Image (cartoon, rainbow, N blue to C red; front, side, top):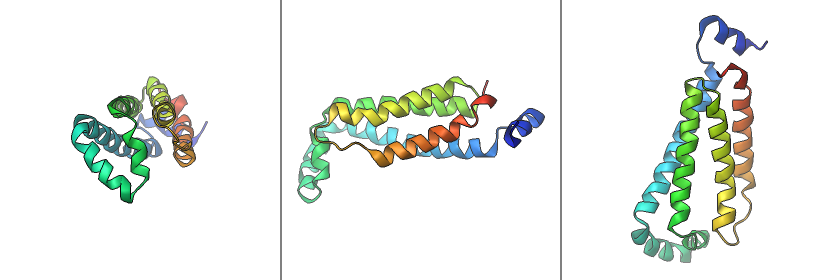
Length: 142
């Protein structure tokens, strides 16, 4: 039995590493969800700004063709991810499944909406690291 499992069984506290992972996921997921929602809600105002910015930063041009539904989908997936983190914060096993499913869909989402979008290897690596770290605590979750 690992040290964190013994500590949890003895005092009923969430392991410190799980707490840190959850806080990092809350911050990143919350900022992403808020960004996607803001772009979705102000899409018609943001497109002209993206058009101007795409002249200086060609990568912005890729997102112009995504459509408004791309940003709504991103918001919903990040919201589901945050729900999963919230459940893991409360030591619920189902939260791991919510988080993992949402994160995989977030990685695949650009492939469905954006043309000529490269496969996000760095995002995939970071997501994989977080999923593997969360999986270390799966046995503690109820």
